Image 1 (tube, rainbow, N blue to C red):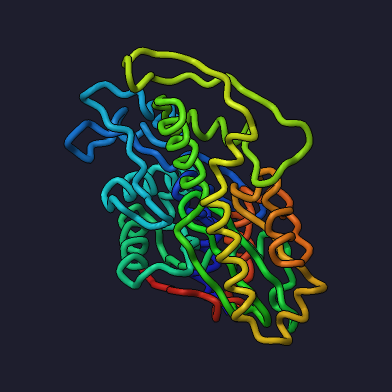
Image 2: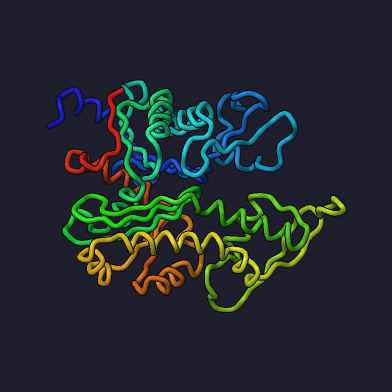
Length: 352
């Protein structure tokens, strides 16, 4: 039972669940749903960790600067492959997001925070997340594995004695897990995900057309005409970039068929992770999945045809979760509401 002090604090602080992603950070608050969804990007003065605009050049403001900064400014993504690659900048980004959500409530105490983490990260990487959140102003910090958060957010019956399978395709990692009785039975975390899809498009443009394009252009191509399998009529889009031979700007037309071909390698790696996980499942769990199928979450689940490719490779029904982009963040908030019941699923739990 919570103490009187804990109940009082809960009235005056905004406890939150954070999906700390390589591409985007989402924050969910109990009873309010998703209250923040911004890119995991920070703009700093070059050669320092000083965030521009008095610490406010974070998220959308910073993402607009990616690839367009002058020599004195760097737009940095402080997470790579789902883990912290720049401790100080991650701390500044988390502090900005926590303060933005907690606002005036921060005068009354530090919020409890549940942060999702990839299932395959090391103890050192977990410690980096805890330290960053502590220094950013969090109170009690809980680390929750992403596949568990995604399963909760997608509404899977993961506490029941039946197998549920989640494939969470994020920006830096793909988390594949089979769960039963409120715990993970089999899981695999691979560092192939949405960023690798973008890189595959950038690489294709270089090799095939001697054209350099930026990360944001590659992401637009992926969203507008990218697919993992043929889906309806083939389409095209105009692409602008820099000619690698002349060094001058130019444009060209790219087809959806070409993009699909370029994405084959990273998509194949994701499918292989799914099949490897299924091969390691106990027979009774595998039997349940014949009926329950596979659920896809994360931004990568929105790639057209990815469900069909996975279904073809596994022979199982595959569905995309409702609003897959926010499944992990929603799961962290639901977890926070039921924390006493679900505490056994925590990777880490610390009082700050």
